[in-house]
View 1 (cartoon, rainbow, N blue to C red):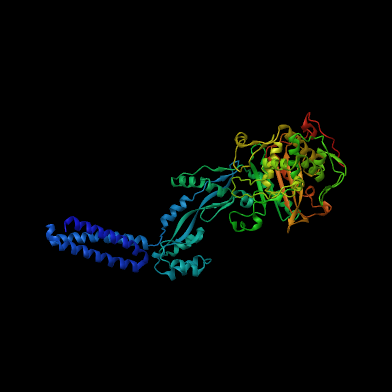
View 2: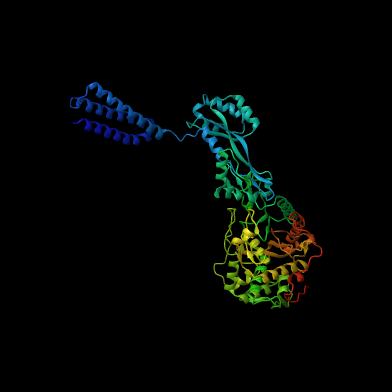
Length: 609
């Protein structure tokens, strides 16, 4: 055997030993012992091979032994490291946790005026290194004295592990931190972490969402920051001692407070089980305010998972009642088949098979289009929809974004409930707001397009300009149709069901809606969802307001009625009165009437009984 063959044999033997040892390494201490014995046998074989052929190599036996020992030591080092990596647990050190805490920095969130809505603060969290705990029983006893709210069994179990790092308690108060320092327990320490706080409590809960104990976004804008990469950017900036610029929302905190305040008052007064409201800029799609009740405090979001704490504007799907009539009339007017002077027979209920369509306040006469709107005639609206046809109706609602899921920066969204088979009866009922359930934010988008010149603009919770909004906007209505819809909505506030929201000086227009809720597959006569879509100022539309009350109750002052004109409309009127000045809408007591909005466009007669 040549010297080269001996050396090749040694290397091959070492490689084989390493491969086998990799398999041995996964069996803890027994695997380690077996691996070492296996390695020693190979080393002896190599040594004998080298010594037995020493003469042919021209080497002394001492030098051969030295070479064998050197090879053996190299292989033992390799084997030892393989075993160490395979057997050792996934150890997390305090320094690694500290680095992770720094990387979990989040950017501040502020409202459109720079008011802080969410920010990070530094808190201390208690950890232990069980391998460095000298006396587990003593450490457990001392820590229980300082933190009596801990579970002693769980604490002792954590300290008894062989791990390099375990959490004891997150977010320890400064007082408790001092007390624990004084105990001087070896193997116990603190790490500075980022904790997300929300200075305004529940005020903006459903927009912001919240972050968990590891400062990861769980819902709302907080989750959007993670998925959009903004949190990663903030962490990278923090690692260099810098701070990412705040995220500016479209929301106005002053307006938000006023809307929530009035919504809470309205929900309480009318004993509703839930309520929601939103204000949007009709030219930019910016959501200036969004409130959903009941809500929760994102600082302690234990209630966030309760079923009644959903964001009802984005996630809830509801039949919106007569507010849908605005879309039906816009469809007809935009087609040119129907004009404001067109007339529709509402003298008797509309019969369709075994079904009869009635009006809540029947006029029992032929109505012009403005009268259909002001009297909120189901019969007249259904006849208008049938004039257009099923396919045209479906196509229009599709174009207006009412049949598809509407997704915004908030991860929470809902798919509308659309009839699987859509025939004439579906068109009849959907025309006046029954048989199609949508998210209220879809109504915000659709109604905004009716008054802003016919531009369908996707809502956003981030600031943007009108020019930026128009980049992706779709022209869905003629300018003349938008003018006619502004006229109809203002007329309804002057003479129709929205009169209780006609705040002097602010030129409010709108449409009301009352829908019976579906309970057990049937419409419940005594459980209503009332809605109000309002726009102001109607002579130059800027803001759209949506208010919804879920199961409001009648009061003596409402004369036993629980329909929208008696509850949600006055609530909306109070909101307009409070937020219009905050939004820079100046009162104008000499503003033009509904008829003045139309200019030279001819109207039909309007008679309000």
